[in-house]
Length: 330
Ligand code: SIN
Image 1 (cartoon, protein in one colour):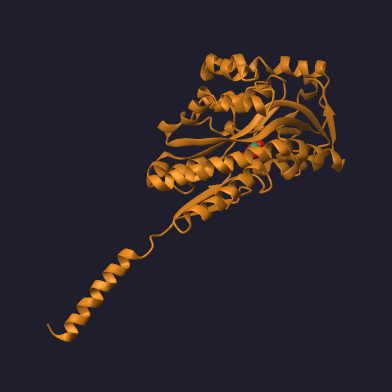
Image 2 (image 1 turned 90 degrees about the vertical axis):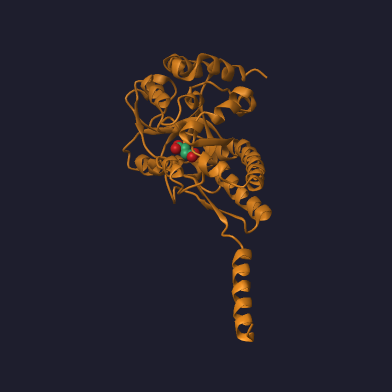
């Protein structure tokens, strides 16, 4: 063989081999969420990104998009199924288009505190709910806390009658709609990204949210009263598409799951701290009056809202409701 032919052949072989050995493109995980970075969810997402960078280096890249920068919660699940986002953690109230059972978590006065929520979520029944949307192409990878919800308003709310006729923004949940209807108030479903402006312009009178969300999104600056009602839960489901998750190489999926479990545990610890810290920061701001209910006043809210359980018992399942309520006993 001529020397020039041999050289050309060697070059061709080297090029082919080189192409085969070149690093594959990294798997990109877009994690879209709607809250501020300094919240349990924002900090959990950032921790997950760091852990993945440490452990999977150039194989997987996590991109975090906070503050509804990429998609709001009204769109994120739809685009996840199309492959435009790989990870999200919407509030459990935002899955009603995909399953009835997660509505459990919206029932008013179901859980006394986050400890009870933890006990239920770690139980067999709680873990089973993570799989409730697999047929719809979504898989729950874990629960993340934000905290217990409080009521904020343009008027002082001490007893249920005080809410009569007022407009409250709610997340897209029929249970939450029924909860405000039970007070003869007007619930209005709106995305999280619009709440501040709706309150500021007085297009609505109030809303329900956690200390962390009201602090980080400055709702307390445009709401003169916050009633410490602890009437409901705002927790998240860390969710991905079954197609994306099952399509990952086994070792990558295992490493991602371990990183998620660790970052969720980290986010949950922050949620406990923030319930107290952000509540205090709001009180210290003196921009709003925090109303503490007497046991008698609180009992009136329970009495007004509790009939909602019966309304949704068939959809959610009486056994599931009983199991969740039983978690209040240690
Ligand atoms: C969130 O915490 O992700 C948003 C909650 C809301 O829509 O009120």
